[in-house]
Length: 257
Image (tube, rainbow, N blue to C red; front, side, top):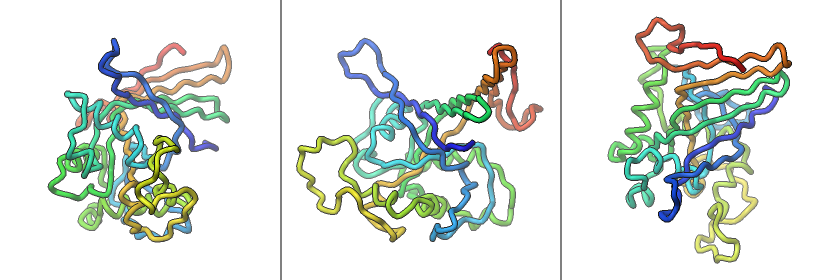
């Protein structure tokens, strides 16, 4: 596709007085490739993992202070809330339902990808973080081994840093912006935060605390081809899991468009 933009929808917890538990939130995001298969930019200074895995899990980068992170974590929690410890200290976790929609203009094809989203943050290798363990375990299930001898050297933290390094210095600097969505009239308590910064240090403590990667684990994909009134076609691909006879562990069904 000529454009890497897509629309991501998540569930936002409605106010207690509302008649519905959630309402949808949608925003335009940038597709950053498949998890464990990062295509490194030529100027990416980060150390890269050797190719040990492949996957069909989409990635995007985001700021840990944004609402989408809370939505992904809270909508996966049966209590519909984020515990204080997670909110203050931990980043990784999730499992909430999301839908990603791509429009491939050149081929006139719409792709709708439904699944669960997991957050990979700077605590992803913390053995004491329950959210990090959840994210690792669930994402790992979608990672297929391609080079067995390279597994022992593969690192979650290195993969996350590689995603950070794949961004331009100015884009890395956005993770040192004032808190996204906060009123501009409120004073900024952290004087390290302001607009328009460039970050060259891949271990910048402020930027890395706020930087994370979201991994979307697909469960259902719909392909809608809108090439013409008489030629339109639609398919649904449903993930059926490992150990089945379906090619690639996906079941294909053609639908009326």
